[in-house]
Image (cartoon, rainbow, N blue to C red):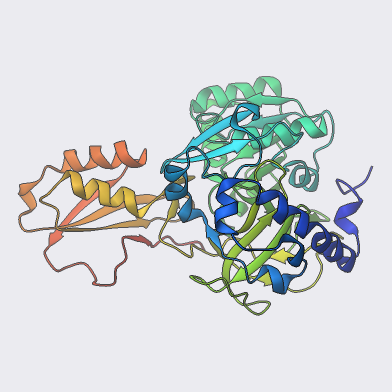
Length: 415
């Protein structure tokens, strides 16, 4: 049985590059049939975009632009080339930002990371990504179906039932956030339940600190790989193993073209330099041309020991903008502004995300003239209502917060 999903993963890098460049003009031309891309790429001759240098002359459309684009051209900013009634699913992420899913098999391309994890037809997968509003659970569903893996669709929450399902149905693998897997293992111990069938885990949607990976491995799940993706693109890159050891970096998906650019610009950086991840996606329903994810990473030189020859990135290395992921949900500066707007006594605010080993703590630091002038509970309620996340509040005196324009500060420890 092959260690790879298909032969594309081990082809000569020059062959892959030629294939991408040959497909690029057709992708740009198809995108220009959508009104949003027609505006963004106005005046561009698709036939001229046949090299990385030509691609680098096109504007970067960033994830942070989507909210405004979608408000102007509902629901997908005019960026889809398949009519909305012909799509399979419509998702709404916090912001709100809307994402499509087309009819194609394994539309989000999750079969590759599942194959790298060691899953094959017949392996049972417990899917603990959320099935509510956002697409992560359906990304996993598509990859599992492509490989022929039955899915236990448990979603998130209800930890005791998660343990009961694992103990009874004995899945081979878990997919979801790493912090939730830790919670399930701890609950299983409390219940004295046997969940030892779960030997593999594909985790994502939040950081996987080395300490948490080691904890999961030491507590019964020896094969823990992380993948990196987004609600707009699906799978972007994924970890691999050789001889049971995790290989350095993450291997890029075969259907994407990667650039690393200097944050705030569209200028590609030198190989190895940290910058913003910009993706061109060859998705026929939702083509993305130079899509800035807002995530930071860098290209890792060389080929993976696993034999896959595609570009590797060093993994997620922080955010290029202030939009921040907390407990697998994006929090936007505009949401912080909305909280402040609801409470006029708050003069200025800064959301600080702290914590370690996947235990995120979100605290809104609020400048006020009088701490008792606004009810803490009211602000906490506003945070929960607007961000859909729990948050704490700390009142500070006028002028206490740094004058640096930062609305969201990521102060988490990842080591």
